[in-house]
Length: 233
Image 1 (cartoon, rainbow, N blue to C red):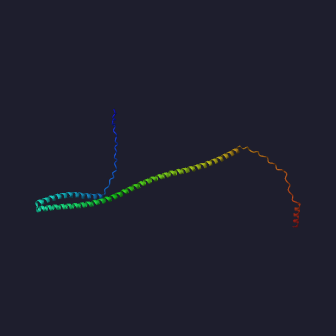
Image 2: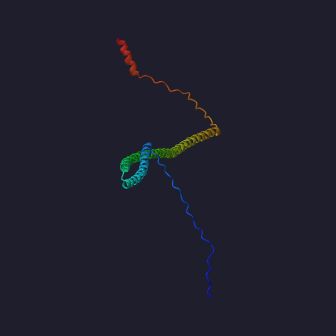
Image 3: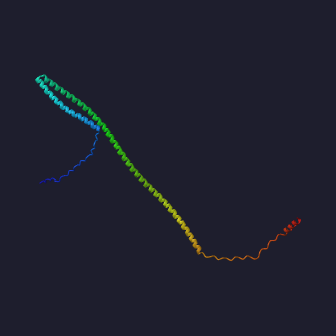
């Protein structure tokens, strides 16, 4: 026998989509729009009332006409004429109201259009102000970042330059210390050498010879010449 496939009793879970509520933007109605709308509503209400008045007048006129036709009296004829005239006046008033409604509707359209322009302008100004404010905030944040980055870069640069200067100064100082140390060692060595040196023996001075050289005698010829010069004088 063929096996009958059993229907699975597990129910599939249907995912319900959560309806996301859209933000409702409330339109602010200006006093001019409210006034124009109220005027049109009043005229339309009067048109409805006038329609009821016309219906009643026509009904009355039909009844009066039938009565005048049946009785054929002057009074019934006057009543029928008066009822017919009332229908005519009511119809004319309704036409006037419809004309007024047309003008009021056009006026409302103009006011709404102008108001929408004003609202768009105000919204644009508000948007520009918000955008300007956001730009100012962004510029301030960017400036702070730039200043911080510059300070960091400058500090690193100064730190490197100072490190080089310190290194050069340390090298110079080390050279001076080494030179001073060398001189000190040389002085110590010379002092030690002098201290450790043996005293030298003094040599006896040679006695001067007692024999002196005889004085030179002037030549005889010179003496004779001197004497001769003296005698002449």
